[in-house]
Length: 266
Image 1 (tube, rainbow, N blue to C red):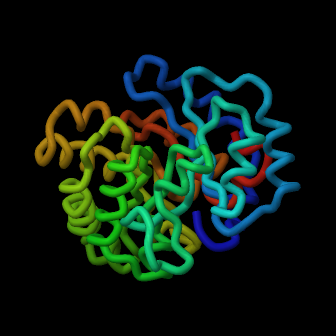
Image 2: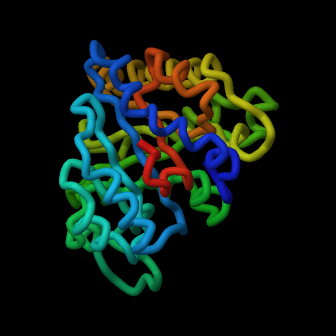
């Protein structure tokens, strides 16, 4: 989700279902994944509230990761339960140097965190990050030992001109040469056209793209990677579509936006 996440906040209680939805996937060999991207939101008080709520038992069928602002990475990691992963929301493509304002995978690891979100639609469209730079970031993060959530997705004009496959396949093609270990990659599909536009992606539309992405992996990487790689949905999730999305065979979880800063997002 994007912006102030008004739509997501209005349906916040849907996220109390996400861990329970993992039960629908118990027979699936891909572990259900719930990612919460706090974006440029929150403070220590908000983090404390989330930590207090999440100290209870979590479903063993679900992997939970929260994406904290970089200034709160250490604080989040120190306070949140050990069975919940902590992700940075961005990093650069080299270990150190004269890159003012950037953060490296080595620094993320030094904060005790093991995940990073890269290529988010806001990084692509607000900060104009191109496919090649995102790919290089992914490659360096993996080499440095991080797990990576690369984000892909098409904009409204691309969807309306029937270019969805062209766009997401091109984004995947750019990523593949720099992915050395697919077991440490979770792909997030963000239909940017369905976020904050008044348009809605149906569970069927989301499943269609996820299935095509999995087939693309089968044809361009290999069958093992296609079958084992988790592809999660990063579009608007509501009480009305949450369960239907989770039931789809190629949707392996969610990447939730600002709503995940509420303690009950899981």
